[in-house]
Length: 225
Image (cartoon, rainbow, N blue to C red; front, side, top):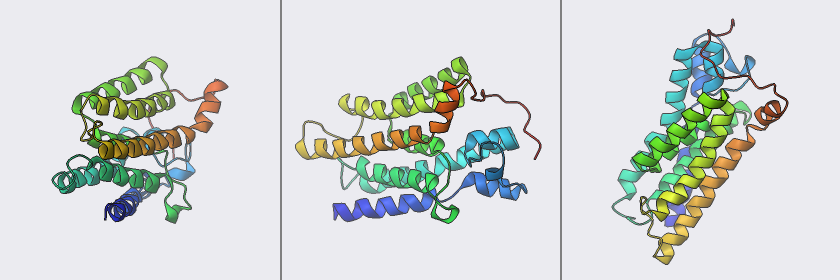
């Protein structure tokens, strides 16, 4: 039964992830965001191509499509699986990120998954850990002026943060119990894989950073489209 629940959560998550906020919003605005800027359908490109409002809407949409389902899963499974219910949230979040990055109806070419991973992480993180990760993310962007660097650092924080908060007893997992500890390790591996995937999706940004060609983050007026 627990295996079936994992599969169901993964599939449902993928379905939620297919909601491509950037593509929907840009088409309503008469623009295909994938044909402008970096060609990405995520928050950063929406901000640069269509302006602050578009960037905010896309971020909220991509954030909520993982955060909301994961919080619903928390409510559903917390009473039945008190020491392991996080794993169903993780499978939902994992599926949502895969749906965002690899939407089948767009030729498996979606966004980079940062906002969606952020929503998923916020659902499983203790509020204090969430605030710390957010401060590090914003601080990194403020210091370096690069959204890509902030995003990469955030992925490292999410992967490490989940492990640290579990060891501090801030998640449902009971590491002194063999079964709960095993499920925690399963979840930690999945979250680490998501973070690694998101970083891999920034490979072009990493190359541009190395060549000093990466665009710095700015709230300048949108480009003409």
